[in-house]
Length: 248
Image (cartoon, rainbow, N blue to C red):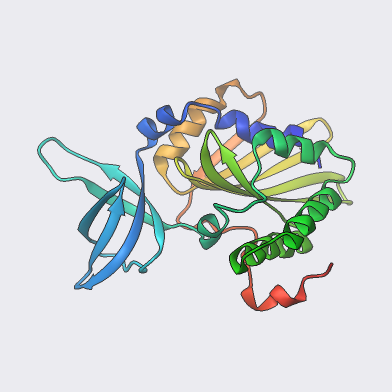
């Protein structure tokens, strides 16, 4: 696996987190309790509030939401999008990476074997059921040809997934990826490598995320297309029932 292409993503998102937050205005919502009649108790930026949502929300779930506020008007939340459960479960994983750690992994001779060895060591040292389950999830993902990397990016916890494909017919390499960022929301895409040519296709959930990434794409010499879509799913989601099927 070559870090060069994936590093394009970090270049796109290398702005100061405060600048990202100011430009995109995404909130992180915790749904604490359903009160009935489309009303909920939620936690937003450390405050407990009562909110009403036309969209049914799940107790205990976390959501991204667009935030807007007009003068003398209450805060408005819109475009609520449920965060993947893995983003919550893996936040305190002992297998969390920094960008430097990720670069070292991908520059190793055999990244998949290196990651598997590291995860098996963490699994052996797991002291709680949650740790064992979370590391098993990462191993299952790897077994399904998908790297799932819990990642701290600009001091915010994120989730990165990617897998590599090769088309023998036209000798093209493809990297599918998914990323869940606190300040940008979910992003999925495809990096296509055909000889020296590189193309990047991105899908995002929020229009302001698209605007922000397009502004940051000006310094990248490769063609980039970005579209807004309603639903973005991880490349791999854990099947709890298959935890016993992990191959070691």
